[in-house]
Image (tube, rainbow, N blue to C red):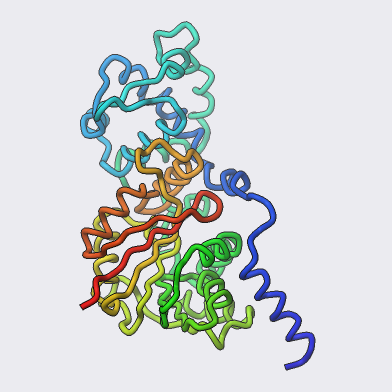
Amino acid sequence: MCLRKVQETIMTMDVLTSLPQHDATELFSYRDGTYLAGLVGAAVVKLDFFSSLAKSPADAKSIGASLGFGERPVDVMLTMFTALHLIEKKGTVFQPTELAREFLVRDSPRFLGPYYSMLVDRPGSGAILEVLRTGKPDGFASRGNKKPWAEEMEGDAFAQEFTAAMDSRGLNLGPAMAQALDLSGRQRLLDVAGGSGIYACCIAARRPHLKVSVFEKPPVDRVARDYVARRGCSDRVDVLAGDMFSGPLPEGFDVHLWSNVLHDWDTPVVRDLLEKSFAALRPGGSVAIHDAFINRDKTGPRTVAAYSVHLMMNTEGKCYSVAEMEDLLTGAGFAGVQYRRGAVDHGVITASKPAL
């Protein structure tokens, strides 16, 4: 290998293992919170949500029934408004906070509804109400055809574009994730739906004893191979072509990584995928879920709650709370659930498959 190639490889390994010098949380929030103002405006102007809740505090199920909204969008909306300190929960019942009563309830002399009315008349704002009412994602509406996200990923152009976007995110999240994972004694890790392979490369760079494979659906598998090769990781990271929804997951691995994957899907799908992990893992193996998690009592963080609105609009999923993910893991058969904090309001939840 020539000297220049060696130097490039060393630089790549350094980026994959070193943490960023600055906190990028706010920079992430500008992109991930794009629907936040629209959701608040729709609730104030179109739904008169806070006025209704002030008159009749209610639990999540009753709120959904009164508005005609499904469970997922109601959960995302209530979590967001709780994180913004606009509503609060007393037992199982939600009610407006004093802040919301002063500015967002119609009979208040300081009601800001007219100020928000111009916001909700903007093109595209109606999509928020449509998603709330139908529970179906709007897709990447800016692209014109509004194809479902998963269907868009089957095209080469969008697969390249989307994978590049997620790769840039992963390069800033991956080193902290790899540092948080305890992989001692592990031999083979499967990065399920691993995109560009950035998380696999970060793990391989930090844990040279580990054999890492990325499991991706065509055409993303071809994109991943190119990224892995350009990072000089092909000797430690390979790419397996396959679809996590078609049949069982590959066997022979003692760790499964789900990094920023499960948040794209609703609870029944997440449950099925974790059950597939449990079935395919070796006895004594472990699963690691790296994602942006809502806290246990669903009061924040605000940035993650806003990202959950983004996911509601564009995918079939949401950001799950730590408690929700624990329940899903134990329901699939895993034990010993633990949570560790990562970078940019992300964290890692791990659990183990009991040994025989």
